[in-house]
Image (tube, rainbow, N blue to C red; front, side, top):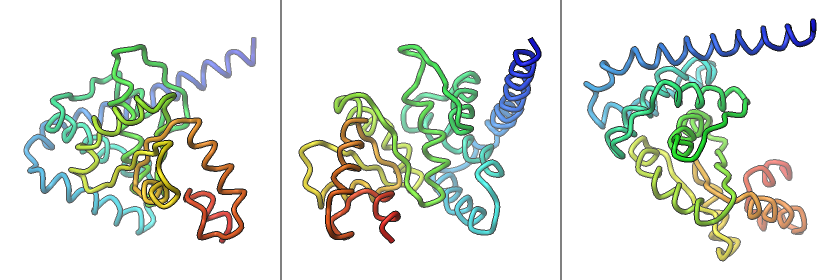
Length: 205
């Protein structure tokens, strides 16, 4: 029982922490509505600069998520609800967020994807089939692009050169199968220049 109590206490504290972050994001709504598209785009450069100056992703999560929330509304007409923000925060913190069909998984993903892409290391958004990969990338792409980030789509029929170009984007949409096979292929090549994935290329340095 003691173990269970510790587990539930930890989960409760985590949820409370996430709620405080979500509350802070909501509080910025009115302020960010007044920003122009250009000013929202400029936030991306400001966030990157803050990271370069030693701040962490957790330091910028509130304004970064508020930026995505407002841009998503302008580009898609969808503004993330409070519970969707909680899901996005949970994902960023390494948790599993369960959302049913129609509850906005695709939109929720844009928040942690954008935030983590600010580091410049690249982010993979993994789906179960190529239809969802293409659909989600094209659907959410306008948000990322309006904020100055590049979006790649990893398709099975692409050449190695084309795949490498997609992997070099800030955010890559891919299937789990294609991601796995690309990694295996990268570990079978002789020369580093033949590798396509960022992770593989870093491992060979």
